[in-house]
Structures are given as C-alpha cells and as structure tokens.
Image 1 (cartoon, rainbow, N blue to C red):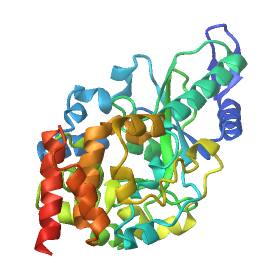
Image 2: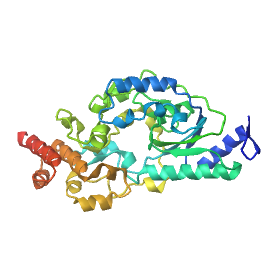
Image 3: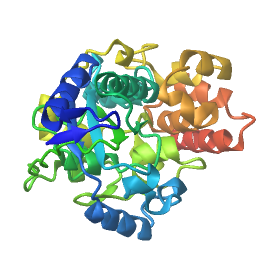
Image 4: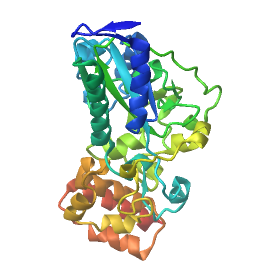
Length: 358
C-alpha cells in the first residue's frame, strides 16, 4: 500500500504503520492498532443500550447523535483511527486486602495516581507530531475519553483485544488494566484484524458484581454500577444500593479482579500512575476529615478531583456507614452531621442510622 501525501511524496503505508507502532512504544504505549471507521454493529448496540435507559444520568452518551459511532461525522475527513493502550496498574496494596478491611477506602486502581486524560492526550499529540515530522502535514485529532468516541469498539476493531463480558477491553497478554486513546486521521493506513473473543463460558465478572450491574454478558446497567454511582451520579445514591457499595469510595474494580485474564495484567512503568497521597492504604476516617482545601490541594491532577468535594464526602459517608462500628467512625460521622450540603447530611444521617441499628 502506497500513500501519496499532499506534498506529492509517496510513502509505503505498511512501513509507516510499523514506524508508528515503534514510535508509540518509545512514547510509553504498550500497543498500537489501526482501524477503519465502520462501526455499524457498535452503533446498533449503543442505540439499544440507550433505549433501555442503562446510561442513567449520562445524557452525554446520547447527546451527540451518530457522531459517537461515525468517526467521520465527528472529525470530517477521518478514514482511519490509530488506537493506543497504556498499562496503568501501579505498585499498591492489593485491592482484595483493601476490600477485606472495612476501615480502609477502596479506590479504583486507575485513580491512585495522576489523571490519565492529560498524560495520554499529550503522548498521542507527540505521536501525531512525530508522524508529521516524517511525512509532512496531515489531518488528525487526538482523543482520550474526552469526546463522543466508542473507544472499546475501535480498540477491538483495531486488534488491540476483545470486548469482555464486563464491556471492558481484554487482552491475553495484559488483562484489562490499561487506558485507551485514539488519533482520528485522514491517512489511509492498513488496518489490523480483530482478535478472537476468549471469554468463553466464563461468568466471573457477572457473578462477582456487588450490585449485579452486569445484567447480561456485554451489557452493563450503569444505574446499578458502583463506578457510575460514585463518579457519574450527581445526586443521592439510591438507599437500597448503599449497603452493597461496601468501602468503595471511587469506582469499582471487582469485575476486573475476578477476571482470569487479569492474572496477566502488567505493572505500569509510568511514574505518573504511581500511588499518590497514600491512597492505597488510606482510612475512611482520615479521608473524611479532609477539609475542602485539603481535598483540592492533595487531589489536584487526580481523576478523583473531578467529582468535587461534596460527592467525595457523600461516597465516604456511605462507606463509613458500611464500615465496622467504632468510636472513631461514629465521631467522624457526627462531626459532619450538620454539614452545609444537604446531600452530605442525608448520607451521613443514613450512615449513623446504620450504626445505631447495629
């Protein structure tokens, strides 16, 4: 395949794709793939998911029309998508140990370090600039969970892995503990073949989900998902789901922990994904005592910062309500009983009632 550039220079597309993979590895990406823009099946699946109301309050999932599943409508001129994945798993106290200690705060492993959005976008931008330095100007736009993009569908189409029953991308060599990013481009690069599905008859992710949010293989009802409840939901967490959240205060990794393929999950070599503020061993009481100024200062540059202090306290209050009773936990909750936020007060009152009943 020969690509003819605007400057009339001809370049072998296969060779360029190989170079892009090499440059991607130099920039810290663990895999690079190439996909075309055809997402008809994914578009139908998205429409059915939205029609079922499984997106909850995530109105942005429906607000862009077909742009999410038709890349050339989002970025005119797009004919290929360069996909990339980067491992994020940090060296941290194992999540199963955190979940077993109700006094600790369970935070999704991806959120223990720096927010991945800026880091991945910057690396993808560097990759695009490296391509331009080689071939001259070309049309492109980079994305990392920041626009109406069907990231898993594109990654699957480009051969980076297959979509697991928990709806996350899976690979045989690295499980699912990685971030995804894309470069939409007008370069007609050769495409990669999709990988086979290797989930088989396994139901581990469906069976482990604390709230049974995976309502069928490859289908998640976000309204029941702990990641949605602790991150996306802006209001009160439904009372019937609060006891099921346990000590999870930001996200949930249970479906990934249960997945046999994550035996092969790779530790990240990226320093920015290392644990900050001791969040892998932090106690609920200590985090609940933070002032808003401390929250903003300590979590600046973290994905957690985006939910804001009010929802942070809401989540911690629920976890404290589920924690083993102790004088320290009761005192921590009582100290926030008259908080200025009605949302916080509601969840603190629920937590105190839980301990009173016990």
